[in-house]
Length: 68
Picture 1 (cartoon, one colour):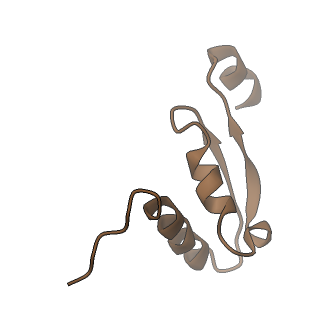
Picture 2 (cartoon, one colour):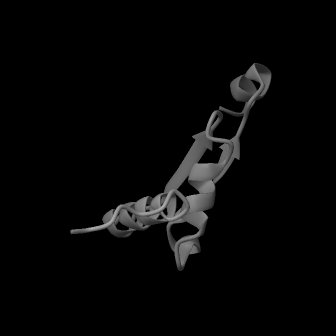
């Protein structure tokens, strides 16, 4: 029986899965409530710079309107 990943490992494993499915494409993210956790998980994958362009984490409405 497979054991569920710990809460610390789950985001990294999800990011690895995303990286495997990109097939030469790239990804960037915009975050608010996640406080940068999605971008942190993507950046934790080996060779992330080959597929991860970057992220914007915006909380204030004006910042969201301006940047996004």
